[in-house]
Amino acid sequence: GVPRTAIAAPVSIGGQRYEVAGRIAMDQFVVDLRTEDAAAAPIGARVDLFGPESGIAADEWAAAAGTINYELVTRIGARVPRIHVDTDPGVDAGIPTGESR
View 1 (cartoon, rainbow, N blue to C red):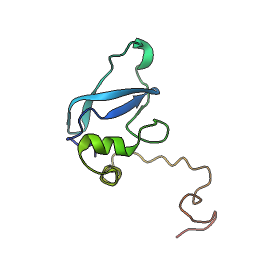
View 2 (cartoon, rainbow, N blue to C red):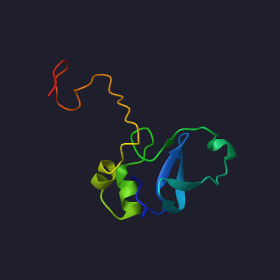
View 3 (cartoon, one colour):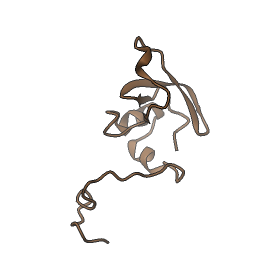
View 4 (spheres, helix red, strand yellow):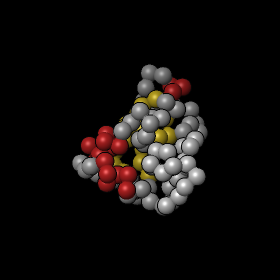
């Protein structure tokens, strides 16, 4: 679901911001880790492409890919696990707690 056309898209690794280097290929891409703080990207660190914890908006990836944010968030494939982090499910969706649609 990551657009091949994205150029220099931002990523967050361990809370530090980096950029995608080169062309995205299939389901892989390279991140430029060059920084003055060599310890900023430890092995096994969490990588976020966009979302509230990363501070990166889907709009930034959309701009890097020449598209709109809606296309990015709807094209994420089924292989990517979904982790729901709401503490009170249904509230953000406008569904009162204890009810379902």
